[in-house]
Amino acid sequence: MTQLPHGGTEAPYKQLRRPLDDRLAAGVCSGVGRYFDIDPVLVRVAFALLAVVTWGTALLAYPIMWFLMPEEPAAPAWHDPGDPTWGRPTA
Image (cartoon, rainbow, N blue to C red; front, side):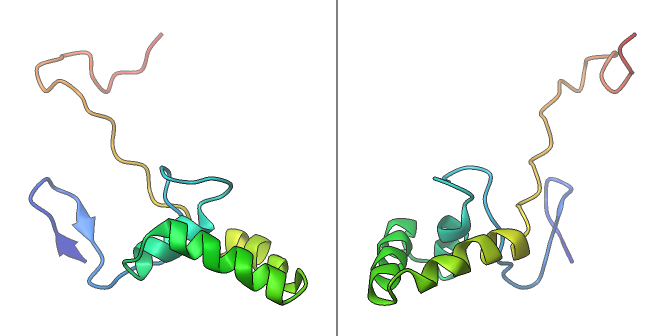
């Protein structure tokens, strides 16, 4: 893991993950597009064409990828460093 300037860590390799933004159904095509550095729309079109060419058999891959691909971790919520109540449980 590599230490980032804002205190987080980053893996030394690319990870195939489903993003929390830019998703139509589950984010599978968007995650594949980000992994290969191509537009997710192209991945979606290619997947649709593959589904047509294989008479729908390729549609089985989507729920499998949905199950196997982890989601991106959520970004930490921003907080005001001067707020003395931050981090305290609310009653």
